[in-house]
Image (cartoon, helix red, strand yellow):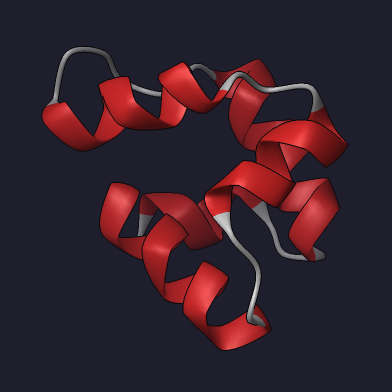
Length: 61
């Protein structure tokens, strides 16, 4: 999932920091996903999907 997140960041020319600030999802959450410490929960995926204008499935493919 994190790879898809990074891909859409690059595509939209947005930083993870900006996404964190604008969505209220802590930047540490993204770090935890990257390191494999935790997996994204549905509520966070929904926020990201809405933010980027994609479906939740986009991140799960």
